[in-house]
Image (cartoon, rainbow, N blue to C red; front, top):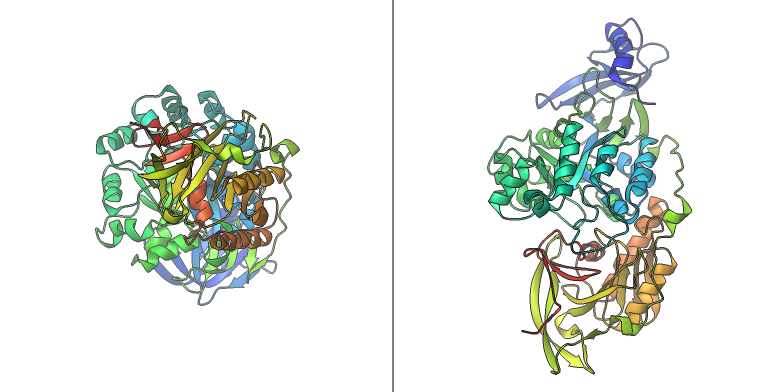
Length: 594
């Protein structure tokens, strides 16, 4: 059980004075001092009761029962803190993610479980939060704010009210309000949005933001509401604007949304002060965790772009702790602080050889040193795909309103490695009264099926940018309402993919000619696997290969696909109700008849 500073302060004091001995002492390290920006050589760190008692020459704190780790030639780095992420996007349970994240040096996360909230509401949030509280990884929750992401354009499995947020702010280790995506609602005074923000501020907690729009007046109105951070910045200019207005700039580098290269120029080119900048992952899939890392990868990317290593480390540690008002405990290696410490040989590569959390060695030389508890989700959480009936090929045929042989349609154009889309128009052939996809010009059939309440509601549309030549794909990971998304080259495979995914309780699937090429089963709310990291990584590798077999060349296509239903990021999306023009904030027809 983690102890508060006031519970152990006298014992820390006694160890610092040498009256009592430390439980663990790290000797001869190179301390990365995130307060001064210095690298201090030949530093010892003495630890007792999970906290740092002394930093310096610590011979007087070593007794016969003290564990000693010689860190000669290694850097002592505070444990990395991810200030904004969705555990569900890793496809792993919180427990399995914790194993992967800690191995890469992440010792604390601020998770926004709004994916599961959109399926199971407060119950889903509480389950993930409770799972996180029993782990050596520190799991703080930002209570989801926009469930659903918008109230006008989609239907999810649950809703959250102002009263839910007010109650959630009282849970231990709830750090604030999750990203407030409904920025028009905030700006124009929607009572739900303003009420949630008010209750969070009353609880003296942090309101995390989400502002991808280009409107400066709206931005200032949004910041004035109390939402004071943003992870959706994709250009240097917008980053500067937000920093100059006092916003906390979260620079994102996930698996598909890679913003460091451009946005970090606020530091490397504009040379702004960095104390109000942090680095986050947002969405990371399993292969990235294994191949590149977690937050250590984002910090490394900043270094690769020209940021001083210590400055980059500050943006992944102390800056995050300060933003959430938790720097009394987290983000640094100093007397009284929680002993979350990484031993790292190369300050530019940032691969930890030893990971210490709460003063306990969790990973050493790539070996897990601690047992993790098991958390079991209730059966109804594992059976969340509620279709009215089995789907058939006719469900995916879009009837034309015209009597012409050709008709003009709106199309969602996806952008590789970007969360954004573009609206485009094209002419498609009409056969037997139904609008046909055009594989030659990369126009694929798209569908979004309500999967929470058995309404049988299906919306149809078209997508460009995936370049499938055959088969179909489907996913119940469909931000943020997580209805059933299907896309394909023919209606028969689309129906097959949807039905097979429903049978396994949700996840992601790739099919061709009535055969399953690959699938990732995610029975926890249709969002997360119940399997270990190694199994999920293998399944995702097979999934990615299967997308390529169908002809898709883009990076992490299943992540880009999963965002095609998110009606809070421009330009155009599909929901279970139809096409949404996010810039105009209105529903639009697929077929253009005027």
